[in-house]
Length: 233
Image (cartoon, rainbow, N blue to C red; front, side):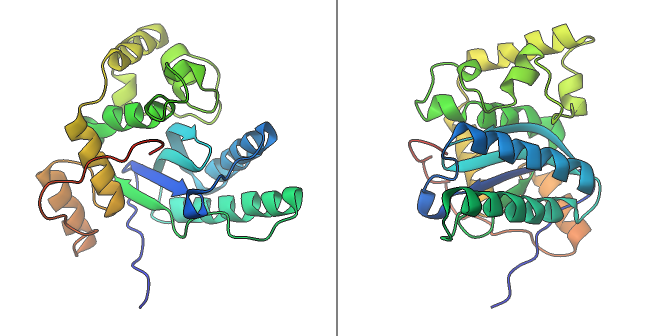
């Protein structure tokens, strides 16, 4: 059966997750994280994709991206796959599969869900019990979005920019969002949309996306979303 094509639209944010095969590690040493981020930066520039948030976990990666055209994200992920997998195989003298098949992705309604998605991504290390606070984890965009640390990978989306008139105000407002945990309902919805490659947004947004594509997107879930899994998500 042929694979369903990915649904990416210009200027519509996308939450993307790629996991290690069988949930095994995809980063083994500090140099691996640095190499992945370096490849990511080159790919973002080459294919005209903006990055708003990320976290590199031991066995998976979360990226929040906005493409300038319909092919940018697919080409970016193909480029990352070639560069990073080649590096891992050469460095560790291995040839087994690194990633778990195709990545999963969900279009995101920026006005209503972008900040929720950013929080979910940057709270991953906390949720997994690896750290107590997001700033304690090194491989994340939280240091830039919350504290203003220079990160040339990050492009600030309009919803984030609206948090304040200055960078200091935006960072302060952004940190305030992390004082409370994400509601379980938000986590369930976000995870379900990723699982079924379904747009994250209200019904109007989803209808608009499907109308633009001329066909249904993803798999509509019946009933309540399942509970989020424990550990790294």
